[in-house]
Image (tube, rainbow, N blue to C red):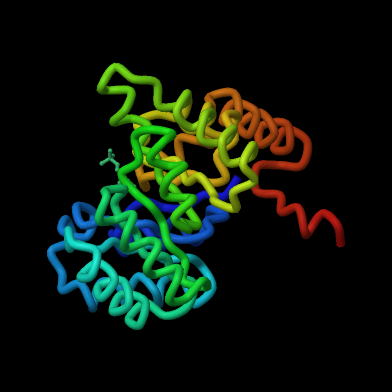
Length: 229
Ligand code: G3P
């Protein structure tokens, strides 16, 4: 399963990229708006932060298919290679997905704001390379986000659709883990939640214990590399 970072905050992107095996950055109009920066500058800065080969996801604003396609082309030109345009799973969105893939099958398209398996299936049939179901928003609504992921995985596998499920909208580690078990190909996680995937008091205790035992025998300041000389 791949991990993406769900933010446009440059410092957070830089910090997370240094430590985590991230495959790219996902944004949407709400995430972009939070940074209060010109869109072009922000996308260019994110691209230079993540390098040319990690995926950058950015979303169209238009509601009509023709304008969505124009926006998708402009975003792709601006963001360079390893780019996926995000298009909401509306009727016009479905039309735009099919039109973009007809024009250029190599254009990576993500169907976003997915809340049902049928939305995912239709978007995959229209040619989407990724679908992004919103887990926490489903859970908050009294639905079961993980069940939606599981059904999408089953449908894509049954019908042999080459579409990857990118689980999105998480509030806790368990949702991410359940998403992985349910067959998601990727998740996109906020910078706040990402370190919590590693956090465990027993890991911290073990690291402290290693340090203590080492210091007891070799001294608190003993350097491992020096000990090998
Ligand atoms: O990637 C989609 C995501 O940003 C939506 O998340 O937290 O606004 O439900 P949230």
